[in-house]
Length: 436
Image 1 (cartoon, rainbow, N blue to C red):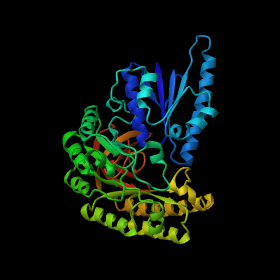
Image 2 (tube, one colour):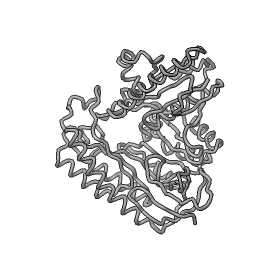
Image 3 (cartoon, rainbow, N blue to C red):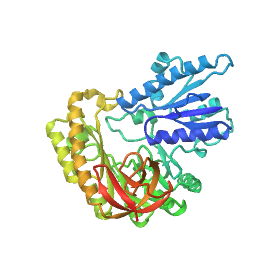
Image 4 (cartoon, helix red, strand yellow):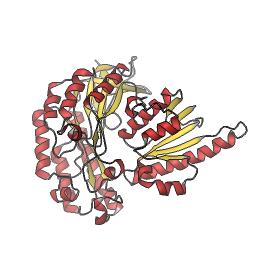
C-alpha cells in the first residue's frame, strides 16, 4: 500500500514519524511524507498539541484529511478501494475523547506512548522490533535529527509537554552511537541532537548528566562531519559538554538554549529554576569558553505578571546579550499547566505588540552581525537549489530555523556537499556569497 505520513509540530515529531515510516517500509509499503497528492491508501497525521496555534493547525489538518478521505472513497467506490485515516501524536494524547466525538471519520487514534500498538495494528508487524531501531528519514539525505530522550522532568509552569510526553527517559549511549553511525553510513553529514531537554540526558539511566559523554562518543565514533546541539536548558547546564565541544572540530560552535525571560520574578513564576544572574553567568561562561559560539534562544512575552517594566527589562536584555539567533512567542494559556491559575491577563493585541518590538530589535542586531560577516569565508553545506540560487548553511545555522546563504547558480553544486564560500552581501536574516 501507499502510506502518506503528515507531520506537524517540532523535530521530535519528525523523528517519531520517521521511525514509524521505517516499520511501514520494512513491511513492504511505499512511504511518502507530507504528500499533496490524494492517492495514498493510508494517511497518518502526526499532531502537535503544544500551544494554541499548533493545536489549531492540527485540528484543521485533520478536518482537511477527513474531507479528502470522503472524496477518495466516493471516487473509488466502484472498485471497492477505501482510504484509512489515522491520527496520532501529542494532540491525540491530550484531547483524544473530544476529538473522537467531533471527528468520527477518523478510523483510529493513538497517543504518544502507543508506538508498538500502531506497528502491530496498522503495519501488521508482530516481529517486536524496537520502535527506534527502524527509520526512514524525511529530511534531506545529508542531515538528520537524533532524538536522545523522550519526555521531560522540568516543571515549567506554562508548558504542557510533561502532561503529554511524561517523564524524561534517556536512550542508552550505545544505542544512540549505533544509530548515529547508521545514519552517517546512509549519507548523513550532520547530526542534530534533540530531546525535550538535552541537558538532562543520562540522569535517569546513569545517575548523572551524560551529555558530554554522549557528545564525545558521537564526535569520535560516528564519522559525522557536523554535530549540532539543540533544546538545552539553562538550569544545571552540564558544563563538561562545553569542554567536549571545544575539543572537537566536528561539533558545531552552536548552542540552542531557550531562556524564555530574564526578569527574576517572572522566571520564578515560570518555575525555570534559574534567575537573572544565573542566566547572565551562564551566557558569560559560554562566550568565555567558546568565543566563536553562536547562541540561539527563544523568549516568551505576555506571560501573566509581565508588565511594561518587565518587558522593558527583557528588551534591554536582548539589546545587551546580542543573541545571534532569536525567536519569540506570545504566551499561550494551556489547560492543566501550573500557570493556568494565573489566567491570561495580557491582551492578544498587547502580546502582538511586544512580539513585534522584540523581533524588530533582533532584526537590527542580526543585520549588524551579518554585515560584519561580509568579506569573510565560511565552510558551507549546500541544502538545495531554489531558482537561480543554491541555498546553504554554515555551522552557525540550523536547518529550517536559522539564516541561510544564497549562492548564485553560475556553476553546478551538489546538495549535501561542503564548499568554501565568501560572503558578498548581508540582509537581516540571509547572506549572499560566492564559491571561492
